[in-house]
Image (cartoon, rainbow, N blue to C red; front, side, top):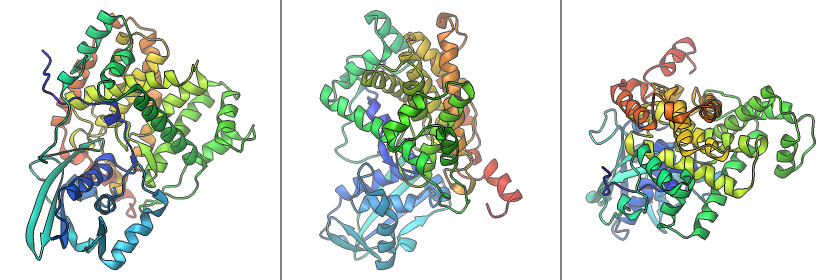
Length: 472
C-alpha cells in the first residue's frame, strides 16, 4: 500500500546543477550553510562555528567541504557561482579572517572555526552542526545531515516538503510505475511529466531540462579540452583530453557543434564508440574533481555516467530531438527517486553501489525508453545495471573523488548501455529479479557493509594503495 505521507521527490531534485567534487561532502554542506544563514539574526552575530562529524570530517578536506561551507555562508549559489573565482574567494577569507555574510563582516578563522571531529554523530554518517554566537553567547544552533545527492535533512522550522499525495501518480516502488503505465498504456516519462506538472509549468520544466542538458554537455566538452593535473596531491593526470585528441584527429573542429557533428560523421566501430563513451565519462568526472560545474546524477561522484550515456544516444543512435532528452531524463530521474526512497544514494551510507550503481541503473532505464523499450524493459534494464554493482565499495584514495571514482564512471556507463541492450532483447515478464527486489537487496547490503568501505578512506584501495605508494 502506498504511503502518501512520504515526501515527494522531483526528478529536478535528483538532477541538481552544482559544483564538484562531491554531492554529499560539497554540495550538501554548501546547501546547509545557505539554509543556516537564513535563520540568523545578523545584527547580533559576531562568530560562526561549524562542527563536522563522521565521513564529513574524515574526508572533508579532500572533498572541499570547508570551501563549500565558506561559499554557502557568503551566499554564493552552487548553480551560479563563478567557479573560476572560488580559490581566490577562499584565499581572501583565509588571509583576512573575515567572512562577509549579507554585507556583514563576521570574524572567521578557517582553521579554528571549522572543526573536524574524529567521531561519528548518531544522526547520520555525514553530519554537521552550525553554531552562531554573539560575544560567545550561543544565538542559534542547527544540526544538518547531508544524505547524498546534495539533499540535506534538518529540523528547520517552516519546512513543508511536498507529499506523494500531491502527485496524480504517487510512486514508491517499481510496481507502482508498472501499474500506472499499464493502466494508461503510456511510457514511464509520461507519468513522470504529469507528476512534475503539479510542481511547475511546462515552460519551467522545459527550461530546466534545457539547462541541465546544457550543463552536462558543457562539462563533457570542457573536460575533453582541459589538460594538466587534478588538484589534491595525488598527481592524477587528466586523460579525457588525450583520448579526445586521438579520436578527433581525423576531423577539424573549432566549436562544440562542429565537434559533435564530426563525431556523428566518424567511425561507428564498436571500439571507437566505446572509447568515446569512456572519454565522455572521464571528462565530466575530471571536471568534477577540479571543482567544475556538473549535474548531480544522482550524485557528483557519479556525475559522468548519465551524460555519457545520453550523449552516446544522441550521437550514435536514432536521436529525434529535445523530446528524447526529456524522456531520457524523466525516466532516469524516476529510477533515482526509487533508490532514494527505498535505499540510499549516499556513499557514506551504502558505498559506491549507491552512487555509480544507481547512476548506471538510471542511465540504463533512460536509454531503454528512448530506444523504444517498454516500461517493463526500462525497469529490467535498471535492475540489471544495479545487480552488477551490488556491494561496490567507496574507498577514495586520500578522500579525493579521483581514484578509483573517475574510472568507475566509465564502467557504470558501459554497464548501462549493456543492460539496456540486454533488456531490449529480453522478455521482461520472465525476469527472475525485479527492480524492487534489487533496491531492497542494495539496501540490505548497505546496512551490512563495514563502515570503512563507506567513503571514510579507511579501507580498500584507500589503505592498500597508500601502503604501496606512501605519497598517496
